[in-house]
Length: 465
Image (tube, rainbow, N blue to C red; front, side, top):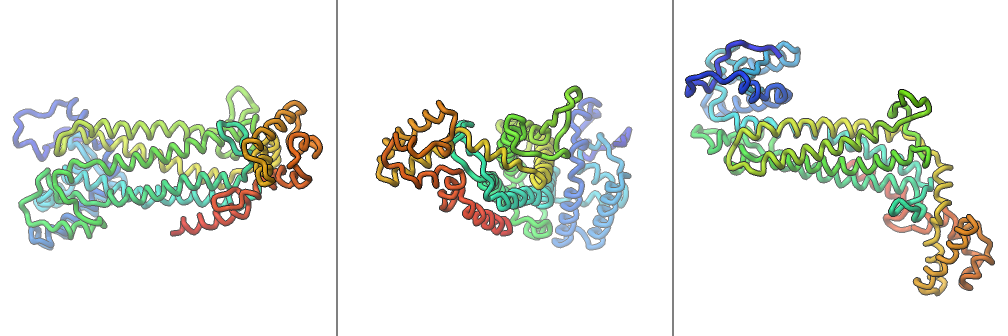
């Protein structure tokens, strides 16, 4: 960032002494808020058009301002813009450059607005652009990878867990669709959050509105906002939209951290169910055999980073009186960091899940351990007239025999099972196999392969909508 030694600030008229050098650096935000330059210029162009529309600027002045701002945008993109800490933020840097370029006309641009409503507008525009341009598409890409995987692996069997103990056999496709259900809720929450982001603060000015005859509906339409905000005090001081986004991001990363925990377990030598691909893992500097699941571990760790951003924003806002306060300069870094983190996590996960390889035999072997079809035997007995509590006891005794002899229920002889209940017949083995168990869950939301294929198809259609 280039530095101007002596810069006249636009607000120095009331002051008799210059700002302390350390205070100037301490209070500057241009080091991080310059990433909103496109949105700042976009908002200024719309504001200039509105001012000309209501007769505050002439058409010539409007066009001169727009040409200057367009040139400034090109300078920033080319890396030629003279950023200055002395000018505090992205807004004043751009305004000062515009005034240097076109003279007094540049000073007219700020008519009818304040940095308070300007920055609030920039943040909303920036967040909206990030959602539309990167976050929502990457979220959908991850969902697409999971749905595709679910349909392809609708018959692949693995053990389902409760308390991380073998519970019942399920299909891998069913498991992937469970993840997708979480992400689909995240998708819907994000679109709902976007509605409250897309409200325009511009025109609120410092806090009370402005005496100029502005047309806020005109500006809102220019910028693609759904409507202008209804209250100027709230317009400049509201950061609920950012808190809501960070809440959304925290829920998303909580889900992705849960996915990560499972993938870390599944890729371990103790499970050995999946291969995440060399591109998404690293090795050890000392142990040559290691293949570490870095991507899931990093995502699991980055969830805490996003949770921290939410906590920071809540703390920033909790004690502020109306309207704008300098505290709000601290809103951008946690928000920007969370945006970057979410984008990175979604991208790498979408890439990784599209390339994951399954070790199906290991999954199946694991499903055979832990008596995962015990509930199926209990259900079988109930269908044959045994009360459920009695059936529960019968199966418990059969499992005890299996533990003692180190055999699964499906490996026992019919006579052995019949010693526990006369209701057990030859057809019992149709229900004790893994395939029979998953196929029996043939209802909406069940793990039966055909139901999984149907659910994957429905999920794909929902994602298109």
